[in-house]
Length: 339
Image 1 (tube, one colour):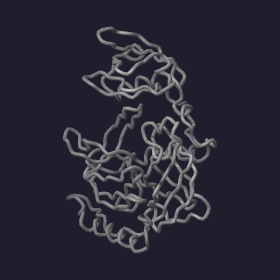
Image 2 (image 1 turned 90 degrees about the vertical axis):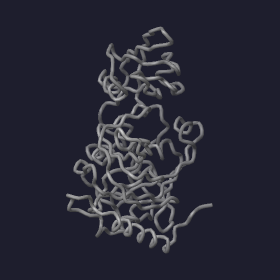
Image 3 (image 1 turned 120 degrees about the vertical axis):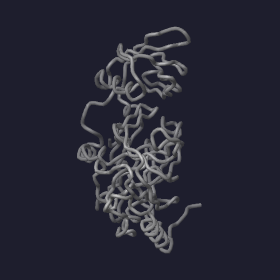
Image 4 (image 1 turned 30 degrees about the vertical axis):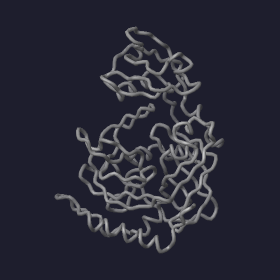
């Protein structure tokens, strides 16, 4: 059953947002609070995003064929920013406004480096938009708002509890990500907004350890600083205009200083080269590494996509050198044919 957001519910959402902004006082030493925001405009600028992907696509194996999330309107022409995995390889994308109106949308750009995507809403779509803010100016302890759209629409006051690098097991690395507490459940594509009503980050993950060294759950947001240098490229070409990073097609788990291969992408570079689940990577390009992030940096430092990557694998008690001809990750995805 489809949930329709009525005008009455929209008013309640706006009231809820105002309640949170008044409840969540700014931390000592900060001049800015979260009161005085245009609550209704912010809520209307965050839309629901639903996507359907064919079952034979790579992403459907891990993400499923039907996906729900949020998107953030960032200009007056219907340009919507969201997290890429929600719409990756989708054959159908729809966006839903606060009032419950649905519009078709198309994938305008996908960037595997930042993990962000841009959508373009269809004819007739109208919405206020959120201006991009300065995520680099955000500090730990700052009070922000997390806004989600669609069926799980919500508004929550959160605090920044971490600004640090994030390494994902799917060959993904952010030099600096934003971590917030308390956790929100409708995180993918959610908007992280500052006291001036500007967009600071895009929701990506629920994490078990938002604050480093403590078992405090929260969310990871991709900062808008990851979008700004490539926005012109994404709008003009649908992707960033720089050589693609070498991609192996492995899912990794960090274990006692070694990286264990949990899965390999079917027909991907690693599988074709003979890398198997259970292999432990202990060296890359003739170098040792100190963890997942260091491994990625050494891997990507070997050259662009297509470079042959010498891996040193541990299989049981045996060291096995394997050379993997890397690839461009995007070429293995069934994206919008216009990209």
